[in-house]
Image 1 (cartoon, rainbow, N blue to C red):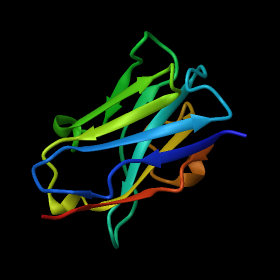
Image 2 (spheres, one colour):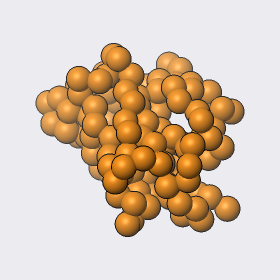
Image 3 (spheres, rainbow, N blue to C red):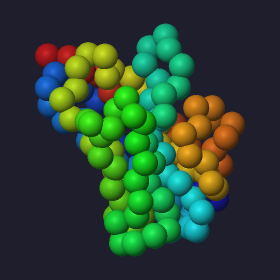
Image 4 (cartoon, rainbow, N blue to C red):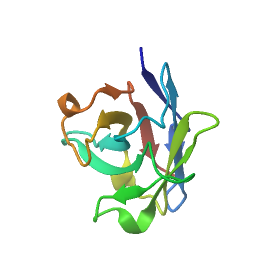
Length: 129
């Protein structure tokens, strides 16, 4: 059974970089046709897809980003650790949210958990000084 688990700091100061890691167990992130995504949900708002990285492709994979976050977002993967990571630069309090990692077969940009085959339980990140 594939399981995903997010990890990272729960509190980040404004202007700093938010870094989260998703560890995948029970399966390989190099599964063909899979996209591994980061999704967030700010308090009182809906799900926002942030970006994704492919399971296949070159050593570093191929990345896709939400246009609204592209300038501040970077997603990478470490196939030796079966992990993929999110970096969000120059955070503000508006980036406070529950952050989820998720994986789906040919799912790119989905904003409903029902579209994904797997997802983590989510981790709360608060941006505050």
